[in-house]
Length: 238
Ligand code: ADP
Ligand code: TMP
Ligand code: ASP
Image (tube, rainbow, N blue to C red; front, side, top):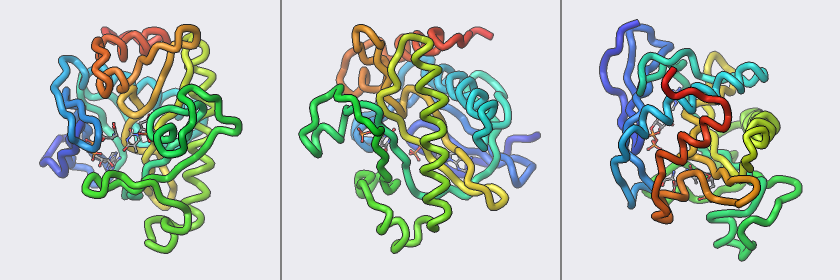
Protein backbone atom coordinates (compact mmCIF):
# COMPACT_ATOMS: atom_id res chain seq x y z
CA UNK A 1 0.00 0.00 0.00
CA UNK A 2 1.34 3.40 -1.02
CA UNK A 3 0.14 6.70 0.48
CA UNK A 4 -0.56 9.24 -2.27
CA UNK A 5 -2.10 12.73 -2.26
CA UNK A 6 -4.01 14.65 0.38
CA UNK A 7 -7.73 14.44 -0.32
CA UNK A 8 -8.98 16.57 2.55
CA UNK A 9 -7.66 18.29 5.65
CA UNK A 10 -10.25 18.45 8.42
CA UNK A 11 -9.95 20.17 11.79
CA UNK A 12 -8.11 17.27 13.46
CA UNK A 13 -7.28 14.72 10.78
CA UNK A 14 -5.99 14.70 7.22
CA UNK A 15 -7.17 12.16 4.68
CA UNK A 16 -4.87 10.72 1.99
CA UNK A 17 -5.62 8.56 -1.03
CA UNK A 18 -3.64 5.36 -1.60
CA UNK A 19 -2.81 3.22 -4.64
CA UNK A 20 -5.95 1.22 -3.76
CA UNK A 21 -9.11 3.23 -4.66
CA UNK A 22 -10.99 1.51 -1.80
CA UNK A 23 -8.52 2.52 0.92
CA UNK A 24 -7.54 5.81 2.58
CA UNK A 25 -4.94 6.83 5.14
CA UNK A 26 -6.20 8.89 8.09
CA UNK A 27 -3.52 11.06 9.68
CA UNK A 28 -4.33 12.07 13.26
CA UNK A 29 -2.81 15.50 13.89
CA UNK A 30 -2.15 17.25 17.21
CA UNK A 31 -4.66 19.98 16.30
CA UNK A 32 -7.46 20.13 18.83
CA UNK A 33 -10.55 22.13 17.99
CA UNK A 34 -13.81 22.94 19.69
CA UNK A 35 -16.83 25.14 19.12
CA UNK A 36 -16.88 24.38 15.37
CA UNK A 37 -13.27 25.38 14.90
CA UNK A 38 -13.45 28.65 16.88
CA UNK A 39 -10.98 27.35 19.50
CA UNK A 40 -7.92 25.57 18.09
CA UNK A 41 -4.68 24.50 19.80
CA UNK A 42 -1.85 22.07 19.17
CA UNK A 43 -1.61 19.52 21.96
CA UNK A 44 1.55 17.45 22.08
CA UNK A 45 1.03 13.66 21.50
CA UNK A 46 -2.74 14.06 20.91
CA UNK A 47 -2.56 12.63 17.37
CA UNK A 48 -0.80 9.49 18.56
CA UNK A 49 -3.11 9.04 21.54
CA UNK A 50 -6.31 9.43 19.51
CA UNK A 51 -5.04 7.19 16.71
CA UNK A 52 -4.26 4.34 19.13
CA UNK A 53 -7.41 4.97 21.17
CA UNK A 54 -9.53 4.83 18.03
CA UNK A 55 -7.83 1.63 16.80
CA UNK A 56 -8.49 -0.05 20.16
CA UNK A 57 -12.19 0.92 20.16
CA UNK A 58 -12.74 0.07 16.48
CA UNK A 59 -11.31 -3.43 17.10
CA UNK A 60 -13.73 -3.92 20.03
CA UNK A 61 -16.64 -2.80 17.83
CA UNK A 62 -15.55 -5.09 15.00
CA UNK A 63 -15.42 -8.03 17.45
CA UNK A 64 -19.01 -7.14 18.41
CA UNK A 65 -20.08 -7.42 14.77
CA UNK A 66 -20.35 -3.71 13.94
CA UNK A 67 -19.18 -2.92 10.39
CA UNK A 68 -16.36 -0.37 10.62
CA UNK A 69 -13.97 1.27 8.15
CA UNK A 70 -10.92 0.41 10.27
CA UNK A 71 -8.30 -1.81 8.63
CA UNK A 72 -5.02 -1.42 10.53
CA UNK A 73 -2.67 0.95 12.35
CA UNK A 74 0.12 2.14 10.03
CA UNK A 75 2.18 4.25 12.44
CA UNK A 76 1.82 6.26 15.64
CA UNK A 77 -0.45 8.78 13.95
CA UNK A 78 -1.74 7.00 10.82
CA UNK A 79 -4.43 4.40 10.21
CA UNK A 80 -5.55 2.60 7.08
CA UNK A 81 -9.33 2.69 6.52
CA UNK A 82 -11.87 1.77 3.88
CA UNK A 83 -12.89 4.71 1.75
CA UNK A 84 -16.50 5.51 2.60
CA UNK A 85 -19.00 7.68 0.85
CA UNK A 86 -19.78 9.70 3.98
CA UNK A 87 -23.32 10.57 5.00
CA UNK A 88 -23.25 14.26 6.08
CA UNK A 89 -24.65 13.53 9.54
CA UNK A 90 -23.44 13.15 13.09
CA UNK A 91 -25.26 10.60 15.23
CA UNK A 92 -25.25 11.45 18.94
CA UNK A 93 -26.43 9.18 21.74
CA UNK A 94 -26.66 10.55 25.27
CA UNK A 95 -26.81 8.39 28.39
CA UNK A 96 -26.63 11.46 30.63
CA UNK A 97 -27.30 15.14 30.02
CA UNK A 98 -24.25 17.31 29.26
CA UNK A 99 -23.23 20.01 26.80
CA UNK A 100 -25.70 21.34 24.27
CA UNK A 101 -28.70 19.35 25.53
CA UNK A 102 -28.46 21.12 28.90
CA UNK A 103 -28.30 24.55 27.24
CA UNK A 104 -31.12 23.77 24.80
CA UNK A 105 -33.67 22.29 27.19
CA UNK A 106 -32.55 23.49 30.63
CA UNK A 107 -31.77 19.92 31.74
CA UNK A 108 -29.46 19.57 34.74
CA UNK A 109 -25.97 18.29 33.87
CA UNK A 110 -25.52 14.65 34.83
CA UNK A 111 -29.23 13.67 34.71
CA UNK A 112 -29.49 10.04 33.65
CA UNK A 113 -31.45 9.75 30.40
CA UNK A 114 -33.67 6.67 30.33
CA UNK A 115 -34.02 5.69 27.61
CA UNK A 116 -30.82 7.19 26.19
CA UNK A 117 -31.66 9.90 23.69
CA UNK A 118 -30.61 10.09 20.04
CA UNK A 119 -29.98 13.19 17.91
CA UNK A 120 -28.90 13.84 14.34
CA UNK A 121 -26.73 16.86 13.55
CA UNK A 122 -26.05 18.12 10.04
CA UNK A 123 -22.28 18.15 9.50
CA UNK A 124 -21.56 21.76 8.50
CA UNK A 125 -19.07 23.99 10.30
CA UNK A 126 -20.44 27.00 8.37
CA UNK A 127 -23.89 26.39 9.90
CA UNK A 128 -22.52 25.34 13.31
CA UNK A 129 -23.60 21.66 12.98
CA UNK A 130 -27.34 22.29 13.53
CA UNK A 131 -29.48 19.59 15.10
CA UNK A 132 -31.91 18.19 12.51
CA UNK A 133 -34.81 15.76 12.65
CA UNK A 134 -35.51 12.69 10.52
CA UNK A 135 -37.82 14.64 8.22
CA UNK A 136 -35.01 17.06 7.40
CA UNK A 137 -32.71 14.13 6.72
CA UNK A 138 -35.22 12.62 4.29
CA UNK A 139 -36.50 15.82 2.64
CA UNK A 140 -33.01 17.20 2.05
CA UNK A 141 -31.93 13.76 0.75
CA UNK A 142 -29.05 13.44 3.20
CA UNK A 143 -29.94 9.78 3.81
CA UNK A 144 -32.68 7.28 2.94
CA UNK A 145 -35.09 5.76 5.44
CA UNK A 146 -33.07 2.54 5.39
CA UNK A 147 -29.85 4.41 6.08
CA UNK A 148 -31.50 6.34 8.94
CA UNK A 149 -32.78 3.14 10.50
CA UNK A 150 -29.37 1.46 10.16
CA UNK A 151 -27.46 4.44 11.60
CA UNK A 152 -29.73 4.45 14.65
CA UNK A 153 -29.50 0.68 15.09
CA UNK A 154 -25.69 0.69 14.86
CA UNK A 155 -25.28 3.77 17.08
CA UNK A 156 -27.30 2.09 19.85
CA UNK A 157 -25.42 -1.19 19.32
CA UNK A 158 -22.18 0.77 19.89
CA UNK A 159 -23.72 2.12 23.11
CA UNK A 160 -24.28 -1.39 24.48
CA UNK A 161 -20.68 -2.41 23.75
CA UNK A 162 -18.97 0.78 24.94
CA UNK A 163 -21.07 1.57 28.02
CA UNK A 164 -20.08 -1.84 29.40
CA UNK A 165 -16.44 -1.41 28.38
CA UNK A 166 -16.10 2.00 30.07
CA UNK A 167 -17.89 0.76 33.18
CA UNK A 168 -15.27 -2.01 33.53
CA UNK A 169 -12.74 0.84 33.76
CA UNK A 170 -14.96 2.57 36.36
CA UNK A 171 -16.01 5.27 33.88
CA UNK A 172 -19.34 6.53 32.55
CA UNK A 173 -19.91 6.98 28.83
CA UNK A 174 -22.00 10.16 29.02
CA UNK A 175 -22.47 10.79 25.28
CA UNK A 176 -20.70 10.33 21.95
CA UNK A 177 -20.83 11.22 18.27
CA UNK A 178 -20.50 8.76 15.38
CA UNK A 179 -20.25 9.30 11.63
CA UNK A 180 -21.25 6.73 9.04
CA UNK A 181 -20.68 6.25 5.35
CA UNK A 182 -21.46 3.74 2.61
CA UNK A 183 -19.10 0.95 1.54
CA UNK A 184 -20.35 -1.56 -1.06
CA UNK A 185 -23.94 -0.64 -0.23
CA UNK A 186 -23.48 -1.18 3.51
CA UNK A 187 -23.84 1.50 6.21
CA UNK A 188 -20.40 1.43 7.83
CA UNK A 189 -18.96 3.22 10.87
CA UNK A 190 -16.32 5.76 9.83
CA UNK A 191 -14.31 8.63 11.26
CA UNK A 192 -13.08 8.04 14.82
CA UNK A 193 -14.08 7.16 18.33
CA UNK A 194 -11.80 8.99 20.76
CA UNK A 195 -12.16 11.31 23.76
CA UNK A 196 -12.37 14.16 21.21
CA UNK A 197 -15.89 13.11 20.22
CA UNK A 198 -17.45 11.77 23.40
CA UNK A 199 -17.86 12.57 27.08
CA UNK A 200 -16.40 10.24 29.69
CA UNK A 201 -16.62 10.80 33.43
CA UNK A 202 -15.03 8.98 36.33
CA UNK A 203 -17.91 6.85 37.68
CA UNK A 204 -17.34 7.87 41.30
CA UNK A 205 -16.00 11.42 41.28
CA UNK A 206 -17.73 12.42 37.97
CA UNK A 207 -14.46 14.07 36.94
CA UNK A 208 -14.48 15.00 33.24
CA UNK A 209 -11.89 12.99 31.32
CA UNK A 210 -12.71 13.98 27.71
CA UNK A 211 -12.54 17.03 25.40
CA UNK A 212 -14.56 19.08 27.89
CA UNK A 213 -11.16 19.46 29.63
CA UNK A 214 -10.08 21.43 26.53
CA UNK A 215 -13.41 23.24 26.02
CA UNK A 216 -13.52 24.33 29.67
CA UNK A 217 -9.75 24.96 30.14
CA UNK A 218 -9.47 22.27 32.83
CA UNK A 219 -5.90 21.31 31.82
CA UNK A 220 -4.17 17.90 31.42
CA UNK A 221 -6.17 17.16 28.25
CA UNK A 222 -3.96 14.55 26.58
CA UNK A 223 -2.86 13.08 29.94
CA UNK A 224 -6.51 12.50 30.70
CA UNK A 225 -7.17 10.82 27.31
CA UNK A 226 -4.24 8.50 28.05
CA UNK A 227 -5.57 7.73 31.51
CA UNK A 228 -8.92 6.74 29.99
CA UNK A 229 -7.14 4.47 27.51
CA UNK A 230 -5.04 2.83 30.21
CA UNK A 231 -8.13 2.23 32.33
CA UNK A 232 -9.59 0.35 29.34
CA UNK A 233 -6.45 -1.79 29.10
CA UNK A 234 -4.75 0.10 26.26
CA UNK A 235 -0.95 0.18 26.12
CA UNK A 236 0.08 3.36 24.26
CA UNK A 237 3.73 2.20 24.08
CA UNK A 238 2.85 -1.06 22.28
P1 ADP B 1 -13.81 17.56 10.32
O1 ADP B 1 -14.06 17.35 8.84
O2 ADP B 1 -15.08 17.45 11.11
O3 ADP B 1 -13.04 18.78 10.61
P2 ADP B 1 -11.62 15.64 10.77
O4 ADP B 1 -10.53 16.62 10.96
O5 ADP B 1 -11.70 14.53 11.73
O6 ADP B 1 -13.06 16.29 10.86
O7 ADP B 1 -11.49 15.14 9.29
C1 ADP B 1 -11.73 13.85 8.90
C2 ADP B 1 -12.70 13.87 7.73
O8 ADP B 1 -12.63 12.60 7.07
C3 ADP B 1 -14.14 14.07 8.17
O9 ADP B 1 -14.77 14.97 7.30
C4 ADP B 1 -14.76 12.68 8.05
O10 ADP B 1 -16.14 12.75 7.75
C5 ADP B 1 -13.95 12.07 6.92
N1 ADP B 1 -13.82 10.61 7.00
C6 ADP B 1 -13.62 9.88 8.11
N2 ADP B 1 -13.52 8.56 7.82
C7 ADP B 1 -13.65 8.46 6.47
C8 ADP B 1 -13.65 7.35 5.55
N3 ADP B 1 -13.48 6.10 5.98
N4 ADP B 1 -13.84 7.61 4.23
C9 ADP B 1 -14.01 8.89 3.80
N5 ADP B 1 -14.01 9.97 4.61
C10 ADP B 1 -13.84 9.76 5.94
P1 TMP C 1 -22.95 18.47 22.21
O1 TMP C 1 -23.28 18.35 23.66
O2 TMP C 1 -22.01 19.60 21.90
O3 TMP C 1 -24.17 18.48 21.34
O4 TMP C 1 -22.13 17.16 21.79
C1 TMP C 1 -22.58 15.86 22.13
C2 TMP C 1 -21.43 14.87 21.98
O5 TMP C 1 -21.10 14.70 20.61
C3 TMP C 1 -20.15 15.33 22.65
O6 TMP C 1 -19.49 14.19 23.18
C4 TMP C 1 -19.33 15.94 21.54
C5 TMP C 1 -19.80 15.17 20.33
N1 TMP C 1 -19.85 16.01 19.12
C6 TMP C 1 -18.72 16.12 18.33
O7 TMP C 1 -17.68 15.51 18.63
N2 TMP C 1 -18.77 16.88 17.21
C7 TMP C 1 -19.87 17.55 16.86
O8 TMP C 1 -19.85 18.24 15.84
C8 TMP C 1 -21.06 17.43 17.68
C9 TMP C 1 -22.32 18.16 17.33
C10 TMP C 1 -20.99 16.66 18.80
N1 ASP D 1 -16.53 18.59 17.15
C1 ASP D 1 -17.17 19.87 17.21
C2 ASP D 1 -16.19 20.95 16.87
O1 ASP D 1 -15.03 20.68 16.62
C3 ASP D 1 -17.83 20.11 18.53
C4 ASP D 1 -16.91 20.39 19.69
O2 ASP D 1 -15.96 19.66 19.88
O3 ASP D 1 -17.17 21.34 20.45
O4 ASP D 1 -16.54 22.08 16.83
